[in-house]
Length: 376
Image 1 (tube, rainbow, N blue to C red):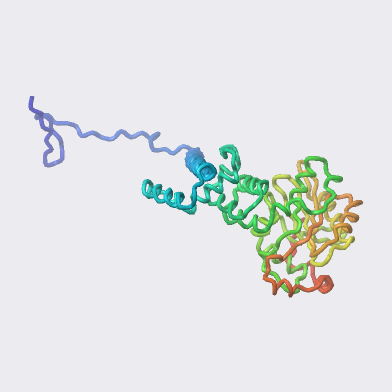
Image 2: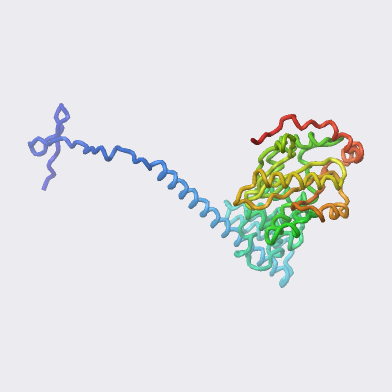
């Protein structure tokens, strides 16, 4: 049976087998056009779910890739131990793999040697280990730095927990973050109950590395304070995860007397204020007394019911640990004392640093009214 044509006349009207056909008109409903009040929330939710799925997919791909690299490294390691494979075999293996998989850049000769080192550094399957969640670039940093087994695992776990980039991980290793974390003398175990005392101790580094400030020569407290707040991102990174900046030269009034806290932070994870006092000279016992006062003041004025006890950290140019321990022994507030260092400065600049005496004398010119941060 021949098809019956539909014909359009000059006016655009359609006819079918000689009969007029009504042009179809779109059905509109006010409900089809109205945007729900919660549409924005729904859209945001869907966007977040898509991003989450994308991130999960990337993590899954990364985990599979890292597992592949580890297994290749394990095979190379085993062959070297059993069959005496030399570098020539690995060269040939890299060439053949590249021929088969020309778009995969991770199968180069140098990467195969990294894979061998990866398997040697983590001999157990890495699926359930922190390192198995890291990108390959992070793992090569850990291998390049020739760290011990425990140090490698510590930095790998910290990088996963805090989301460190490759550059941040490299900086943390170079600045010996592991060795400095929790090293400051403190009275936390006497003033805080466990596990709060252990958590507080972990945040107290010794020494703090202020190399990123680029300071040299004669430095006074205010100059150091200005530099730290002027580069607050790097300062927070050096202090460690969880710190948020509240203010500098935070003002308190006690019965008409004015007091200024050098730097005030809030630790989000531990839910506590952290008072930091800066001294560019050698530690003196009276510094502990002043910090004890400031900690008590912040605890009384700012601490809320759901906050943990305020702690104080005194950061000074140099210290005698025995004098520090005597000073903290009878303090009623939880405190730690740490030094800071410019140990990454060039040798000539390190030699240019003045002795402790001139630095202490330089403190006298500071004026607490400059650029103060006032509360209340």
